[in-house]
Length: 418
Image (cartoon, rainbow, N blue to C red; front, top):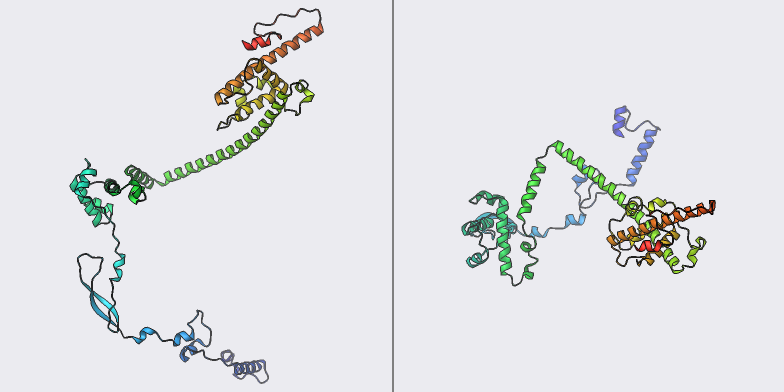
């Protein structure tokens, strides 16, 4: 407030009776009524710099500031002392500065020796090499040199490939080392099951796969931007085709499930009709009304027509289901009475209404026979209708003899037998 008064050129006390004077009185009264107290553990200088404003970050508790560290009671010094490390096998003695308390140096191994990690290399004897490890592509000297370098460089085969002579590829070095190590592990085990979980036995190195992987990776890394865009477009198109095929497959499966459900219901009704032949003589006695949306020409067009125009043939063939689907297509086109006549004709011919072994080939032949019998019955029906119409017009007319390919009504059973 005093700074603002200085800027405005007003007296610090304010005008007598003015609002600023009243504000100054209220503020001075407030400060007198609520004096601030310096917190414990904070020096006077720090408190004066902060002005009593609470810090942004939490500070230590006052009790922690008064607590004395235990280590302060000991005399701490630094000494130049020798040391050895277990990471080296030559007992090399070096020197470093060590923090000591009351003149006592810390005991134990070098602190950084725990980071010295080495790979356990499997070694072989002369007898094991002669018995298990002979290879025409590798000599004993080359194999020994490979294992020495593997132990020296911790299986860093890229470095080993630069130092071994004669020059061999990294894949050849890996294949030789891992095959020898796996052979030794299996040879030293009592049974193969004892080392089945060993890394060298469980994860066998595949040299051919590694070569192909690196070759494919090299091709991928050497592609240009245009080739990458083309590959991305091909993958996107393939993904689109797969999604479209998946949608079509789901729709086909739903359609097939509905067709099979209808077919099973129709087959049940046909069995009921076959069990009661007396009731099947009149159309009004049928328990259900079958659909007649399909034309009769489709029923007489054979198995090919049914397969192309009827319900889709399932990709996985189910015994009985495909036959029921085919029969349902024929029933839908020709009607239940006509199919009943076909069943009776098949029984007269000594053919089972349902094949005993309903494989795909047997069902195809069965449906072909059904279509031929259906065609024969339709021709007989047409001939009978023609004869009745002629006799109705002229009772004394001479009925022309049937064609050689059209059997008489009375000889239908003999024709079907032949």
